[in-house]
Length: 453
Image 1 (tube, rainbow, N blue to C red):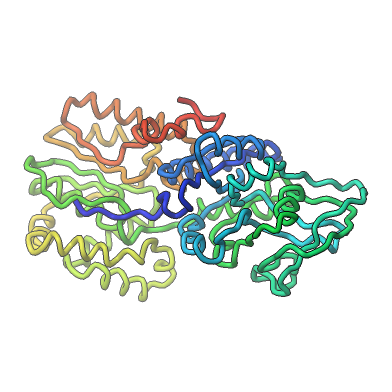
Image 2 (cartoon, rainbow, N blue to C red):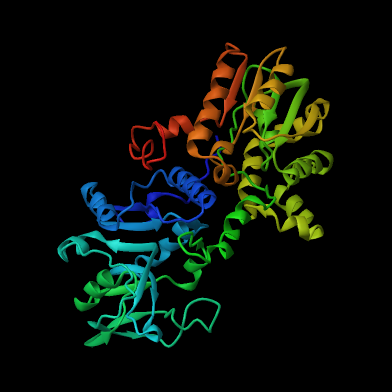
């Protein structure tokens, strides 16, 4: 088996740091509430190797982290959209953010006759400091004019973000030597002031990290402008030019009559090869994304079985509109390494036996259980049928639309269907129920109140 090392692992965060999901009961639109819940379902499974807690309350969330043995916590609020934030932050813990007790979005509100603000959408806290400081509460916004004093703050003249007119986003802040009088309070005033009064180091997420996440601001009246970020997760066609799952290298002894496979990278080809699809066997390449189907069709018509990176790169260069929708291009070398491990026997197979297959390209969403199982039934009368779902049951696009409850239930229906064929159907990728019930990760099954066991 060719193993790939995934980046979403605990070593992206400091030692004994967990994720704290801050739940949001102030989202105004029910649809947005549902999709943001679904995204937390997805992220919690994606980062399942990292310990996690969840709460609607900031203090309770930090306390849960302490109770579970965390030294620190990365708080992510419902409404967050994560790209590679957790992966990309790794390089900064020992450099830019070393010794910080708080890191987050720090906002200068002096132009509003208010003190500073820290936003809860994404915030790191040293829990050992938080406990020693008396477990300070966060501090909610208060627009009632009341004079109060806080530590003076020194800041950079430079601002983070691409909009240089937004001068309220400093690149760094430090505690001043005196106090300032203020009229209004903004969110996080108490936590931030506690740290600065003690002379502690407070960090600001840099430009690179700010652009590896987004937030929909569902609790605000003008949030509609940000909801498009959720749409971008759904309405983007993509083909995975390289595989992100393990690929087998040992050919099965028994012959398979029918192979079903999603269309990412080498999946259909690798599955047919490894599952020993018989001469004239049926290979069904299925996917909900037409681009993925198109690319597999092109591969079958044009690829010679070698130099995958060169083949894909040249196509992307000649077809830039489609090529910009190719994902995991940075992993193409891994695919060539995998092909090298298979050697000349694979090339011979591809150019001879594989040409005998009855290949079908099926536009089908695996979440449509009735249609998919009906199609399998119609094509599974003779011999063994193999089906690979890849990561379809914990794929970001599906996860925006379907809760974990639904995805677990759909997968369970498939497994019941497969087992009814009494050994005539084998499968790969149908494993999120197993992941959800993994005793090594007891936080997963009931992390959020909307989840069902």
